[in-house]
Structure formats: structure tokens, C-alpha cells
Length: 116
Image 1 (tube, rainbow, N blue to C red):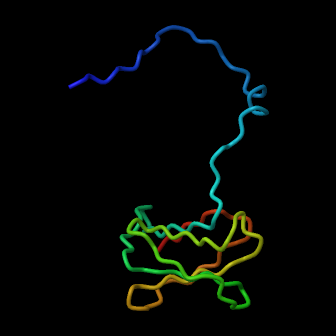
Image 2 (tube, rainbow, N blue to C red; image 1 turned 90 degrees about the vertical axis):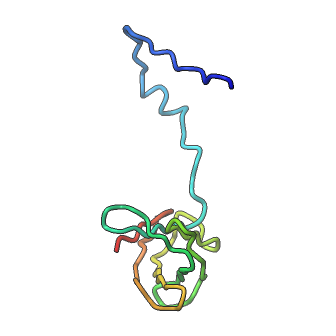
Image 3 (tube, rainbow, N blue to C red; image 1 turned 180 degrees about the vertical axis):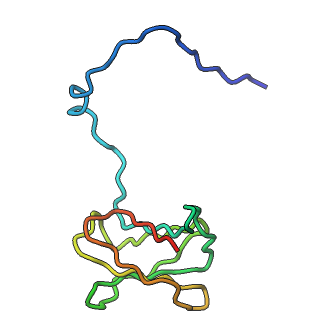
């Protein structure tokens, strides 16, 4: 079995980089393209939401989409591009249709965390 390479630790002084110079070059490469909702408890741990689903609708009540949660407390709405251009209402339901939470997601978000 092959050994994994170890990381070399350099002791001594290193040169400082001019951050202002690199801010213009370095841009974020990863962006959430669809509205992502994470459902957690008050400690920040996601719920096991197998079988749960959520709906997203406009504030006037027009349903946009229904989507299922994965087992890690995450649901992605493929019909809602980000950043959102309007306020949205997200309702979360159990597998038997019991309503758990109703949350208003403000405009300009790519992801939102429901804490309950």
C-alpha cells in the first residue's frame, strides 16, 4: 500500500502579498444558480428530511414549484433562478402532508436557512 505524501511545513518568513492587486484578478467561481433552502435546528444541524417536501410561491399566492428535500435537509428549486428578484414564500411539509413552517425569503438571495 502506497504512503500518502506529507505536506511540507515551511518555517521562516514568507513574503506578504498585496491583496488589492489580487482582488481584481480573483473572482468567485462557484455560485448557486437555483434557490437552495437548508432546514436546520437551532444548533445549525440539518434535519433528516427524507420524504419531506416544500413549495415556493409568490407573496400573492401563485405556486411556482414543489420540490422534495434530500436526506440532509436541503431542497433546490430548479425553476427559481438566483439571486431572486422578488420576495417568496416557502412552505415545508412532512411526507404525509402536515405543514411545518411558512417562511418568507427576501429578494436577492441564492440560499436561505430555515431554523426551527
